[in-house]
Image 1 (tube, rainbow, N blue to C red):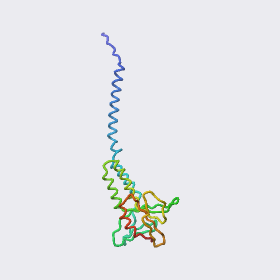
Image 2 (image 1 turned 30 degrees about the horizontal axis):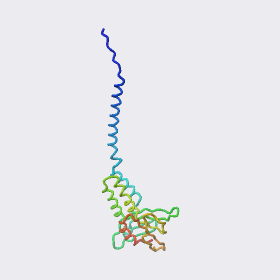
Image 3 (image 1 turned 180 degrees about the horizontal axis):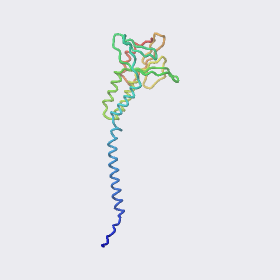
Image 4 (image 1 turned 135 degrees about the horizontal axis):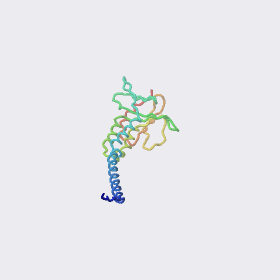
Amino acid sequence: MPKTKKQSFNKKAFLKITVSALLVLFVIISAVIYLQYKPLMDNPTNIRDMLIRSSRDSHINAPIEPKTGDVYFPEMKLYVPRGDAQIASFTYRYDTSYEGWPESISVTSRDVTDQAELDLYNAVDSEKVFSKVPYMQACRQGLTLTAQPLPSLDGEKLHHQQALQDGRMLYVYTNTGCPALTEVVDDINRINSY
């Protein structure tokens, strides 16, 4: 019977091939993961949609009296009579008083916030989306209405004071970061108590 030569295991060659194969596999898997998740990390569409959705969730629509068209802010017992002109579609956020701050409502209109959100839709990358966020937030903040003067706030200035029918004084502050709020101020000038 012929003798077969026993083959020896070449450990050095095996390690070279194995390490090279694992390195190539690691590079391929890393590239696939990067290409798969990069759109999620820097996707202006997802970022914009989350920012707009969270911004909208902070405000509610102001109730409108169907017969008269008057707009109400029930938490502070205020309303804007319709008058001759169509009133903007108001949204607002009510803030209770806390730690020396009086109760207040932040009022804006859907037209103003929709225009600010449109700027976010025109942004082509995440950096541009984030650069437009302060303007959108200022427009969403809108006007601050309170029955007591506020301490000085960044970006807010006292627009006017107005005496209400129930004897309260209403202080109307505008957010200087959103010039489009002048439309809202025109309607708010007619506000009164009930």
